[in-house]
Length: 143
Length: 433
Image 1 (cartoon, one colour):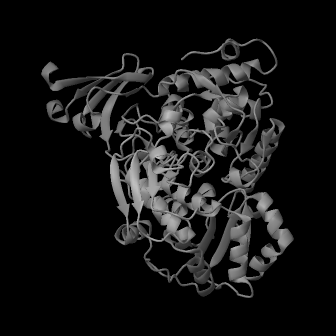
Image 2 (cartoon, one colour):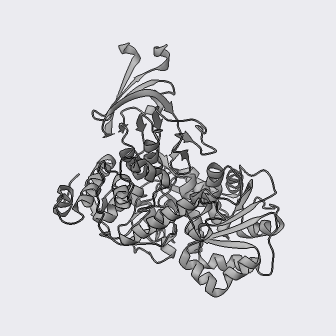
Image 3 (cartoon, chains in turn red, brown):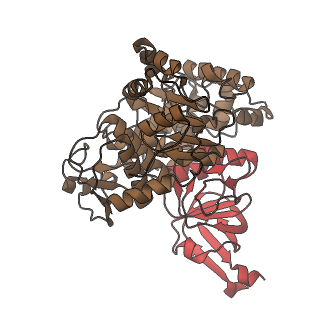
């Protein structure tokens, strides 16, 4: 088991520990107008995740784009019970920082390896927002 | 993050009236600033946000805890606090309200539920009682809130943020609902990102090799730019004549929608780009891109990807909110004409612009042609299009980007003339440049 686990180190920016199945995209995500907060679904028509839900997933993405309603859209997702379990991202912006702070899901960024290269959709990922670490069990090793 | 004495006192809570709300606001700013990696906060006296505009979903959610009352709702959601306070004090800073989700004067036409209108009006009264200026527009810079170069601001609304940084040379990050609420309570915002001069320098060069003669040209270039640089800072070169407020407005709105552009330079024209060298400072361009006829054509096709049927039901103008000059233009194009019985024409603007439009007779001209001038919101914000709309058309690349995702319609993008023509004939005849 241990050799199938990969550990990444970074900076935890929202406290707490959570784990779940990864949903990975190489494309930045819009909040307001890009997701449906009530269902936790990506709705941006030309996004590679269109129609997919991040509810209860560990969302792994490069960063935020689009409207300044980003935080309110993800904040509302928390209220609607559709927020991701944890968040991992690369590019720091005010949109994503405020969004994860008010969504209150454990979040880690500034990892020592690009999480988009290491994590694939379906991998099992544990995010420790206190220690700033990410533990990945590859989907292949889980079978 | 280091706090000065004033900030620390707010975080500790000094027991003065409103201290509890300021404490909650400071707590949020500290969590947010530390997530960013900011070293300190900076004072601001210019906030543009959406304080108090909760949805009925949010109200009902907190009402379960007994926190459905306005001040309590503001503490729970806007200040992201686990406990409510019964007293939200008047804003410490000059604060204006951006666009809302509702035009109370056209609620029925827009299909707004009556309960939502009433709740919205209460929210507006609450915002006013906190000293929030009810500009209700995405274009505060065209409606009396014009920051000066170097001024630290805390603005929301991506199209206003990019205008504030790029065209005015004032300094703001793209703030959100909760951070603007906290800034309004405290007069502080994290000193990070665009507040620091070194973060305002160009990162990519885009050599513009086509004529830039219209709002549509600037909208397309904006959309191309956002896709090319994502949230980084482009420097546009090859543009000689200064663009108008309207052209910058459409460029920035598009670039902030297809990407996350919060600042751009036009070499020789915008305030922090006297020269191309000055715009880049010590930076070397990460990408050296060209925007020529091929790129323009491809961009036009990308923006219009959702458009299929040429039977247009709905023409939407006013994203970002039309200025009085644009309303004047629409009135001239519609003067003495009549729009098709198969189409609706909605033009969105700020309430004070509508006042001038009324006074100048443009509202009458537009209404006689069958169009309507709406205020305070837009189709994307309110998720409202005329009943039965399947195909929309607009002169805004931003609105074309959002409408299909939000309302499920097809959307065409073209010039203002293409749009007015489609309103009159009911047929979309816009063509690639």
